Amino acid sequence: MPALLADSRKTEAVRDEVRGFVELHWALGSHPGGVHAELAGSGAGLTHG
Image (cartoon, one colour):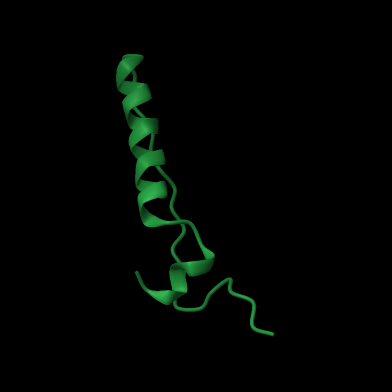
C-alpha cells in the first residue's frame, strides 16, 4: 500500500462501507441515489511538521 494512504482510510474499509450502503438499499427495495467520493493528490491532507 502506498505510504500516502498511511494517514487516511484504508481502501478496503471504504469499499466495504460503500458495499454495505448499496446492499442495504437493495434489501429495502430502493436504490442508492449516488456516492460522493473525494480523492486528493499526493500528500493532500497530510501534516508536515
